[in-house]
Amino acid sequence: MFWPVRFVLIGAWRLKLIVMAAAAGFAVGMLRIIREEQRTWGISPSDARRAMPGDDLIAVPDISETRSLRIDASPDAVWPWLTQMGFGRGGWYSYDSIDMMGSSANELLPEYGELAEGDLVPTHATGGFEVRVVDPDQALVLYLDSELVERQLTSAEAEAELSTEEEPAALQAAGVLGGVSMSEFRATWAFELVPEADGSTRLVERMRFLTTGDGPMQQLSLPFMGMGVFVMTRKHMLGIKERAERLAREQG
View (cartoon, rainbow, N blue to C red):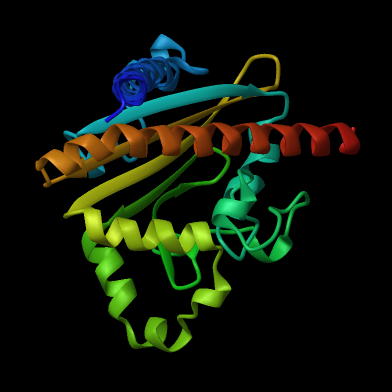
């Protein structure tokens, strides 16, 4: 091989290795920054330490993350935005192209104004979280585990109604990947509305997760799954804040 060409090819290969190493280092660095943001965004030390409704459902989780923010509206003005959450209902007030067919509601929907223990809060057309705790204007706890997912997937009603055309492509992909990579698991998503002296509300959300999987792919996937949850949940909390505050202003 003509030596200048060989020199260029060797140099290009070395440059490729350097770029790949730099990219890997950058990804690791960004992961650490984002993970730190996950742990500290909107949180107060007291919220992180204290017990919340639903903690007893997973006594010793693999992951427990608590986030909070202040909403300039009373708890009873925030609560309806929680009760109407869900796919095909009021939405998740997050990135709708990922987990909704249309836009999340910007108004209250009376038909979804109440929840009871045992109700389903859908994440897709044929399944979702089960309501475990309902304390109006104070606390809501949603629960999901691998057994519940399996029951939803294998039910005759789910098979009859299942249509991939009814769900966003990203939601379909998430469901497929979840079924392939996730072993037995349990998860809770708790919401608490804490009234403040000035009439505002502190929305506190806690997600707890436990899995029996301990393989390398499982351990590697958890941080990235956590990043995705953080990005969606942050947008979700800000969406509730914006809607509740706007309606409170309009109602005077």
